[in-house]
Amino acid sequence: MTRHLLIAGACALALSLGACNKKAETPTANNPTPDAHPASTILTPSNETNAQDYVTKTANSDRLEVESAKVALKRSANADVKAFAKAVETAHTKAADDLKSALTKAKLTLTPPTALPDDMAKQIDDLNKADAKDFDKKYMDHEVDIHQDALDLQTRYAKDGDNADLKAYAAKMATAIQDHLTKAKSIRDALKS
Image 1: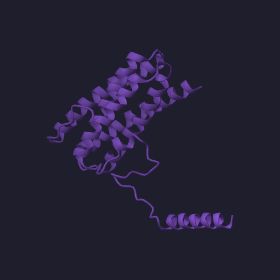
Image 2: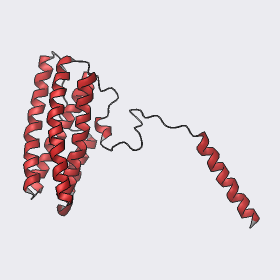
Image 3: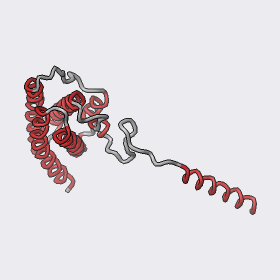
């Protein structure tokens, strides 16, 4: 019995010493904080004040919104969810066109991506495969998450971006995205009650 207590005590001491010597991890682009939102890897950048990074992330975000909305328009039976999806599809299609105009105005030759990256394509696939009875809740949770990430991206670029024309575009988009986020939260909360 004493032997078991000594072994247990030695193990506890070793674990304590190991924990004391462990350095706290500093969040980086490649190592986000453990409690970071899963979607933040999509929009949390290595350098969000860089025009190219901003354009890529914004274009991907708009495309994700449009594709998600298309899934909701096909799958949802809820009138509020469908109306929200239609509004999002229209707004983010226009936002993608407005981004191209902002690039022209800024005299930048950056080209937005034309296809979703794999992690975003998987999100669309997950929505397509969601159980019908849980679809509306899953879609609205998704919309709250990605609109929050999009709002964070637009707000940061509007404040610290490296191009004045794109900063103006980002500020305008932040206002529109905030409206979508507020509406998404309202619908999500109504579905829960």
